[in-house]
Length: 86
Image 1: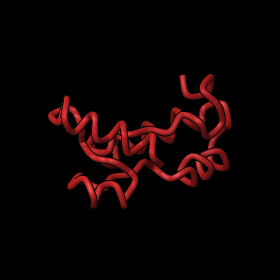
Image 2 (image 1 turned 60 degrees about the vertical axis):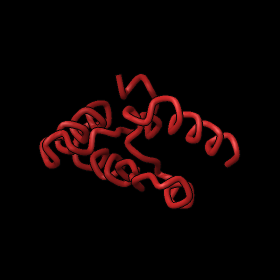
Image 3 (image 1 turned 120 degrees about the horizontal axis):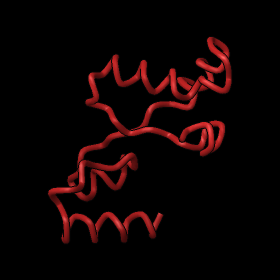
């Protein structure tokens, strides 16, 4: 928690124009940032049941991008590993 606070405080001071917000709601409130999050793991897990596991992350990300028109471009890479993400 303290490491995240330290980094957010640094970013707020040094490059506020590059900081969109944080997924930590408590720190967002304290630092006057926008609380934002990432797509839930369940989105990717559901796609593993709908399509071939090998293609599931790509399909899930394509559908997410289409659904939100690129507005929510934060992606998780750890659902089934970085190799599948790339």
